[in-house]
Image 1 (cartoon, one colour):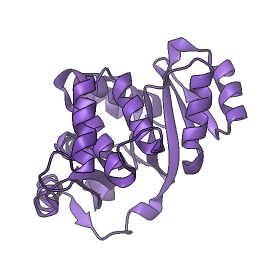
Image 2: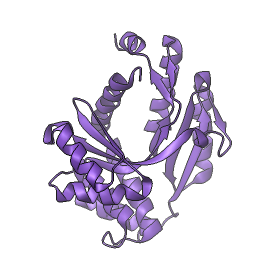
Image 3: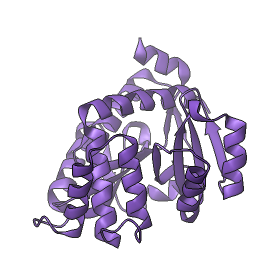
Image 4: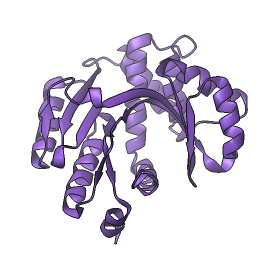
Length: 250
């Protein structure tokens, strides 16, 4: 797919920058709080919480931060309850977006997300008008240097994974949504440590952007949505053609 490898590297670099700025800790805390709210604060009986904690540990999130996020989710810290919400929208050139959030103020978040879309030549869409273009999958990420692709593929497929994609930075394993925990645990049993384990929304018909001006607008919108304090995940159907990405990077 045009732009796939380079765009993946751009996102990988951004993830490292986010880690330096502490944004990744915020996203991990949101997911931990949501998991604790939905299934309780005991990771031994709450698979989603166990996965969220593993993700947090993989990026060296301090134990105190993890414990505080669990207590926020279970309501032990008081204050307004955190809620899970997803917004759908369109960016420039009709590019589709799904923004998953954790918020204690739905009115504020809705207004802020609408403002971000509007200021970046986009618009918020009605529920369901975008999500049908995406497929839900489990996603596990493992550093590329820890295991050869062929060995990982054998282990992952035997555990129930659907496919494995690799580049110089990492291996990405996709599973059926209900097989995510099973496959991740099998990989851990094989001595591997995922850096990310979560449910994702993958576009069924990616749209390749070939206009530099439009690509720049879309990337700006993506970054502003991703940088919003309550955002957990941003999914989109756009890819940037290799030559256009080179122009933007120069």
